[in-house]
Image (cartoon, rainbow, N blue to C red):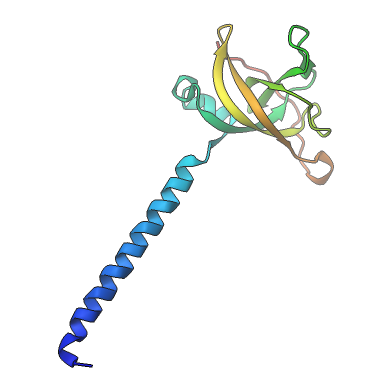
Length: 148
C-alpha cells in the first residue's frame, strides 16, 4: 500500500462514517415523528387543546369515579372522564372495555382529540389500564373541570 494514499483513505472513512451517522439520525427522527405525542391530562390542557385538534395522542390520567357509562344512543360506545390535578377531559371509545377499567384507575388513552357538541373529547382507539393492586398511591380525590 502506498503511504501517500493513506490520507485519502482516512478522508473516505470519515465521509462514509458521517453519511451513515446522518442516515441513522434521519431514520430515528422519522420514527419519533410517527409516534403519537404523550401527555398527562393537565399538561395537555395547559398547552391549549385547539393546538392538538384532530391529532393522534396518548393521554394519561385517572378515571373520575361514577363517570363510566355506555351511551344509549350509540350502543357499544362508552364514555368517562379522564382527570389529573383537577383537570378532566371526556373520553369516548367504541368496543369492549378492559376488565381493569374502574373508577379511579390509571389509564392511558390512545386516540384523537376533537370537539363534539362544543366540548373537547378524546376519541379513544385503545385503552391501557394499570392494575391498581400492583401500584400504591391511588388519588384521594379528583375534581372534574371540563373545557368548552
